Length: 161
Image (cartoon, rainbow, N blue to C red; front, side, top):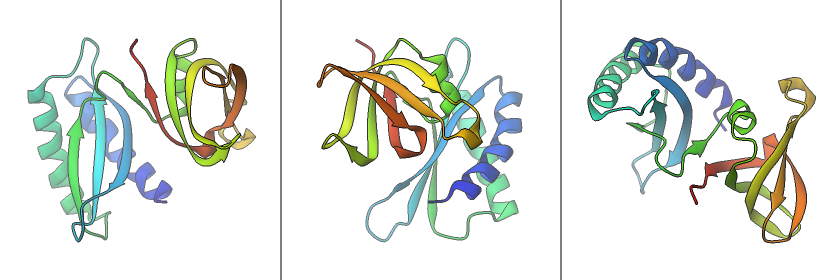
């Protein structure tokens, strides 16, 4: 939906989070309640975990920079948080990083009549962005391997079992 805008925002955030000893996990827009625009959700982490002070400082600085740069031309609310225990997976490189781990993937379009898959990441294919990258997952519900085009993934979460 806002892919180019998200890329521009990610570029801004990268320098900020590094200053605070953190790294960017991902950026997503999610619908907010009625008449309140959207939520710009920024996920940040650090080796050993991110603390509330880091999140607060990053949020304040990012908010100020977004206001000055005026990149977002619609009503939004900024949220900066850790990826949580069931870590959100946003980037293709994260799927590579978590090979062998259990995930839940929500899809933009149905595969075999389903929009949610749960299983282990077996492999990633065509990791170059212009080569239609995909995720190979062992679907625990259907007991079979599914190949999911990365572009069809709406949301992914690492599952701690």
